[in-house]
Image 1: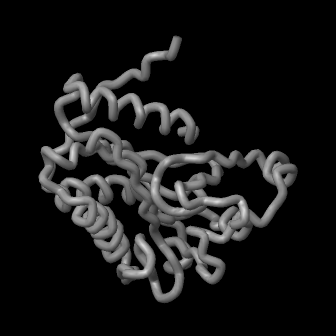
Image 2: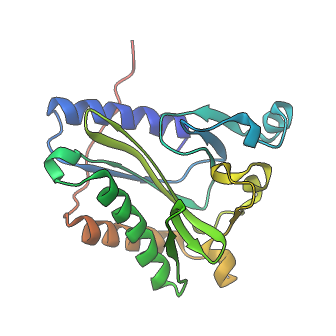
Length: 214
């Protein structure tokens, strides 16, 4: 799904969750074509290629209100956007982020990749390489944005930035660590299972249509 479309859906769901039109928490699971997003701390000084280069590659740069600096989304990377009312769930922000990391750690472990947290930087790591990222925003006490786990993505677009604003960070993926691609359908099925287990929820499909803006 195009990043902007997913972003518009998140904002719409946050407002519907706030108004009580939607009474339950929601998890969006998707992949994006290549795009860079700049968080609240994000600056273009961590983007190491020109606008002309990105235009030629068809890669957009979008400013968003999540925490963190610059990151990349691309096909083969699985992204989860939870729309959760933290007040009704009883979760603190720290507990919520811990759960997002826990989901990625458990999923990686299933495929034999041992990932851990690093207190210096949110997300999950394998040695000195970052495997999964967390960047959240909260509006009306409701979360959006979320987490991104590198599965089969090429990682090429990460070479054109300083990921998370860190000049010495290297990115990795499950496929790179395992030296083979993983079936995305199985990865997503397992991801849903771990989301339900870690957040202690039972999921049901949501019928949803984004209303066009006037």
